[in-house]
View 1 (cartoon, rainbow, N blue to C red):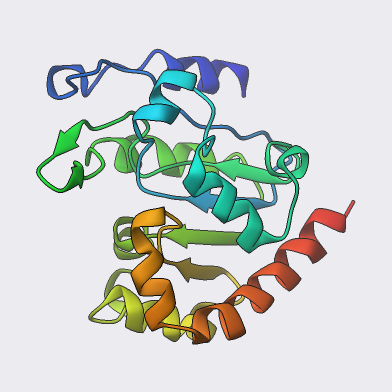
View 2: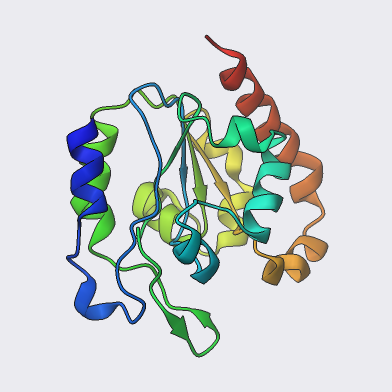
Amino acid sequence: MRKLIQEIKSCDVCLPHLSDGVNPVFSFSKKSKIAIIGQAPGSIVHRSGVPWEDKSGDRLRDWLGITKEEFYNTDHFAIVPMGFCYPGKGKSGDLPPRKECAPLWHEIIFDKIDIQFTILIGAYAQGYYLEEKRKKTLTETVKNYNQYLPNFLPLPHPSPRNNIWLKKNPWFDEEVIPTLRKRVRKLVKQK
């Protein structure tokens, strides 16, 4: 496992496309039970090198109903984004995650871990893992979360930019969050 982690940390496949350079941000261990697959690190996380160490991460941990200590415990969580490095700034936010990372690393990582539950954050992760099973929109995919259980649970991105989406979709807090917390708590308590 150490060798794999070092290989990923040394990866520079996307270097020509990354204005801020490479800094793969991820965490996992052989014992990880829950996979969190998001988009790509933002600029704050790129600089810190700590996954989800920003306002989006604060909201995500709240949605999961866990502490920071639990979140960063690799016995519980594998944090493996679609793109491992910050993709750079676009016209209306960050650029999409680089397409090279997931096909290059995900299968190798998940072949070494016995993941029991995968949280798919955002359209890129949902498209990659749910393929033709996902709905036409992210909202429809998340609203039909029961169709993907017990293996997957799709979520919107927890970014503060999604506050309007959250206000328009109160069912998310009422239905999805309790289901998510129950499943996460069960796995985190599991020895």
